Amino acid sequence: MVKIANQEESLSFHEQPNGLKYFRQDYFQPESGFVDSPQSYLIKQLPNITNPTHFHVQNQFQVFIEGAGSFGPHTINPYIVHYAGAHTGYGPILAGPSGLNYLTLRAQHDPGAKFLPEKIDLLMRGPKHHYTSKQFLPSSPESMNNLGAAELNWDAQELDTGLSIGLLRMPVQTSYQYILGEHSDGVFLVVINGSIDADGQTLGVHKNIYVPAKDKRFEITTTNSYAEILVLQMPEKNGNY
Image (cartoon, rainbow, N blue to C red; front, side, top):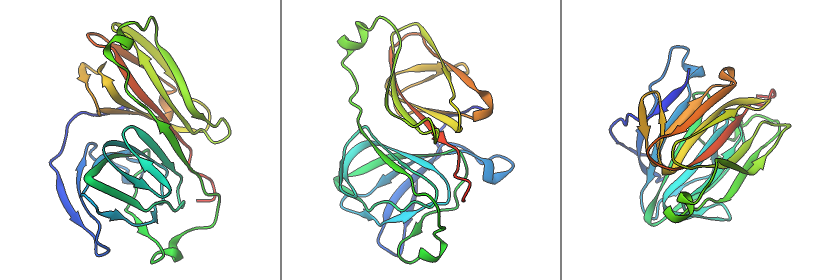
């Protein structure tokens, strides 16, 4: 079932014993068969706060959308995408003086962060997989208005794992049919410029859609605006996990 992250739940404040402080806003309600429920939520990490190194038991994307900071050795600004496979440690994430906001996207429900080294006994052996994209900069209105046809440009495309990260640029009144690749566990579409139309709704900046792998394809449409959309194809979970 396609899920559209357009209805925002209220922000809730969280504080961990390790000093991590953040607000969280969930976009998807859990489905029956809880483990198979996709997740989409916003994290607002407070200024100068560190999210320590940790791992999750599910594959995930993080899309940094506002603020600045650092992610391990990387300087973070909008719009950089990070992928971490299940049981792959990553971080720390340090928010700058203005804080750091990011979307967390998963095809499968995850029970929560496992901080390291405290939870090292829960870290399963197997392949580790992570990727940090280039910074995607939204185009100017002039550039988008001069765009003649939809174009999809890849930053990463791993045919053997199913991981793909790219930017789809679409003029006004255009349709584009995205076909999911092999080894995919679905695809997330995140609007970073303009708006798209789906299921009778107009989805603006930072709204996102999850399309499960069984759907095979999904048609993206613009009506009254151009759009730039991050295309984040989730790999299948590695069989070791």
